Length: 182
Image (spheres, rainbow, N blue to C red):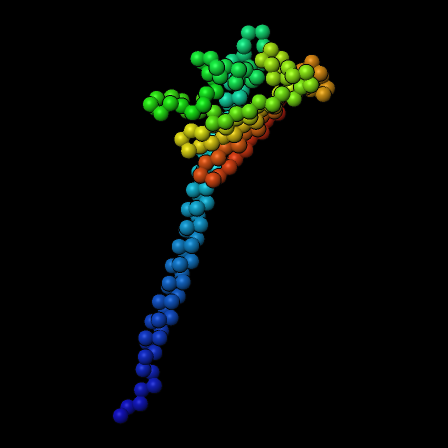
């Protein structure tokens, strides 16, 4: 009989080679999955940013374009029209009207008059007021806070600050702008 001391060595070597290959494949899979996750979050981040930008643009539109007669700005009028047929910032759209532009609707809103005489949110004056609203459209949400307050350097003018947070697939981006008179 021949004494063969190398029985099964090739089986053990094959096992170790397969283990090394499996480790390499799993490591590459983890790296690729992490990369895909980062790329997906970058896409969600862009959508969130543009949702926040929609809130900013909505406030700027109302402040510059929908100015009531004899008013100095349109921001304080954004919710003044709720009871009228034009309703600039309505509650959720009617389900049987799918062609409505959903970004004009508001899920919730609040108006805070910061003036001592109660005229800060008056559409004629609109100089010491805060308006908050949130809107949902196509799985995107933006919550916006617009604040008008007297300018400390020039009391005849007012500072205008807008902060808007966009949310999409649990990714959030926020934009904040401050407009002060020269």
